[in-house]
Picture: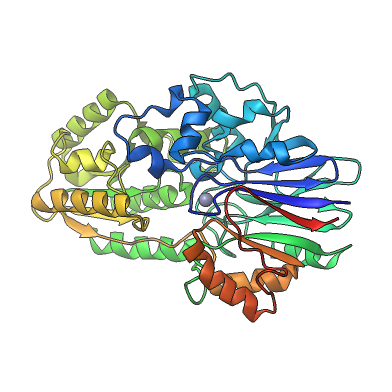
Length: 448
Ligand SMILES: [Zn+2]
């Protein structure tokens, strides 16, 4: 059987992930993501109303025109998890394929919400839920399997396409967490089995985000302990404490909510995406928040809540807000600019349970946000965080478990691939032979 990989997006930068695998006549697409920084750099771009081709030209969504060179029928579109760089282009591209979108329940729900917000295209693809550990027949001799992985969002999986030539494992995005705060540990046992059963692994597509960092990525339980330590240290502070994190990082939000209560403060989630992700996770029973936890997204209800906090005393509350990257329209940035009823005083604490995404726009915006907060007297607690991506030792472990015949580095720029190439060559792979460094829009034929 011919097996071919189309590297469509995410092979020149992080963002707008998309890869297609053809096995015989059957094609499966993994991820359809958005590169948000290409959108945000323009003022007031409303992607909801934009045409796919304009977004492709901006570099915001994958240029899937290369799909016409792939002979076969698309049988499934499979987003691995709910981050925008993996699902953000579904509403712009999926309608061009007569195939269902297959994902885990939390991811499907986020895809559903995204399609609902789409104003240009009618996206009618079937939405099919599949849990980690389950399989689905794709063609006569091909099968799709979801393996549970751990990442900075719940319900993440690595999809595996089983073919008669061996398995194609799509390895974006994960860290190896054996003690996650929410959900099950990564299923390394299954990866090892896949590496040894049948024809083994034909190809492994790997997320190189942290390949240049030595050692191992700590577990989410380490970030949780770090956060607890910070919050206990300010337990007796009688002024304002504000926290921010990735709104899609439900495990972290849960820790913040719990520790707020531990130090005698009422947690409250503020900002549109805080309400969206936490509300969805709670509705689907992925997390158990206190019954009286307030979540407010609309400007008016947020401002009303801030007024209530000021009236009843800042020392009784812990607002958990959007704005960890200094996004201009996010809640924390508005607080820094003094645009909300919440008044910061000298010595008030602002906890960033996040790391700045190393990209000039983010770095600039975050700098500005921190300065504005600082000018009002706020004290900054930075980097209470662990990454969601594998470092060096995790990469070695994956190669060991899967023993793939071919490896394709992904989810990075050419520069970002370099450390992974070193690491894989250490393990006996060779660029140009079985280690395929590629760019967006290429085809890699694995078997004839
Ligand atoms: Zn991700």
